[in-house]
Amino acid sequence: MNALTFLISTLFDLYLMVVILRLWLPLARADFYNPFSQFIVKATHPLIAPMRRVIPSIGRFDTASFVLALLVVMAKVLLLSLIAGGGIDILLFFVFALVSVIKQAGILLFWMLIIRAILSWFNQGYNPIVMIMGQLTEPLLAPVRRIIPPIGGLDLSVMLVIIGMNFINMLLAQYVPFWAVI
Image (cartoon, rainbow, N blue to C red; front, side, top):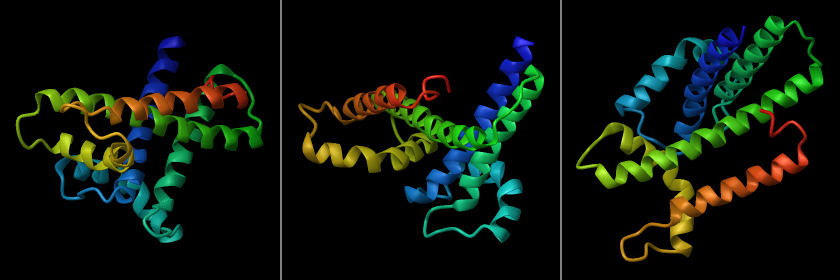
């Protein structure tokens, strides 16, 4: 049972990350012709295209992608609760889905920042994944760089954003009862 739960959680979480990236790409004005962006679009298009006919975007915010992210979390929770044989409180179900999407976006951002920092030490030219990570994370790092510019070639903005994210995560874990469980 634990192996099945792990497999289901992992598969749903991986697809949720792809959907969150689909939501994030237009917000960051990332290059949609990048091969990594094209993978994200192709992996989510079969589910998002029909939803877009009913759910319009609000400016650059892709509402259909956000709804799909919530549906992915809801499907995961529903499937895991059916396997465990437990019931679901409907109101907590929706709140849990929203908090899960936000937390998963934070986890994705954390790992993108770490990977971007490590790849910056070794990158020797154009790499589509490095480029898209830069485009997605730069809107968060640029304001920090304006306050604390690179010191002797060392960019501290990634570290400061990660510290800030962990601080916010700790505050939320204190005041939102199920935040730490997700």
